[in-house]
Image (cartoon, rainbow, N blue to C red; front, side):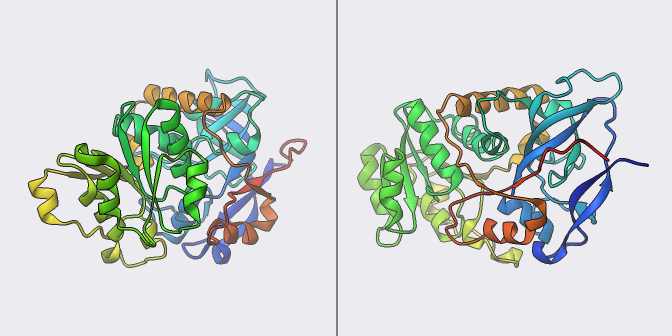
Length: 354
């Protein structure tokens, strides 16, 4: 009898709650250079849901296992002639598909195969809830601040959506590195929250002018570096607020979160500001970073993130656990307004494949 496992499978593109099915599938077999991992916990990111809707930067061949980002588990077996973590070792799987690159295994299943170059051993002192969230949001924060923009101690960094998971991680990392942050939020109630987690300055777009407040805070030297995950008019204001020669890296578009018309996914930049002040607006996408970065550099960055989390420099919220069977409730929570809690699929450690 072939070994089987449970997997959460999308039968076609569409709303996740409508197209996901809990199925029994054969346990996959690792090839050379791969490991079979028994999944313990895996998060539900909003991007996972956009992939299932067919509204992300890459497409799936349906039916497909959901979860295209990350998980934590233990190595169950290695492929033929493969060096890597030993059987039983606890690892994070950075399952983000590289673009360009081959498809990766979905994480919403009890077992998956992954290239050993995408495995990161994690210490026991890191909980599953923290470890399963290492490879996306904390890594994004680290790359934006240190590699994409190279922000130096004492410099200002302007960021939007400061209350998001990445935004809070950016604040923590900048505090550790001696970088000053100007943090943009859209609700007055969020101002004290951001100050409490270490944000140096907070601008509330509900009742403040972003461009004017940045000028007041930064003074004549201005701000030359920014990260934006809102896009739309707010992203345009961030570009306008930068000093001449400034650069903004756009890594998300929360202002168009439910937008289905590609023509509406815009940042209405002021041409005079961009041209005469030679400003730069460019994108960052973790999938493309994995597709253009050597495995050695990627492994080094993941190790750095793991150490920052393990040492308490970066704090990851615990999340709310769900069994695979409760996927409808879990995916609903993932996009609930101001839910504040990351839903996680937590898979019971059974006796092994059956």
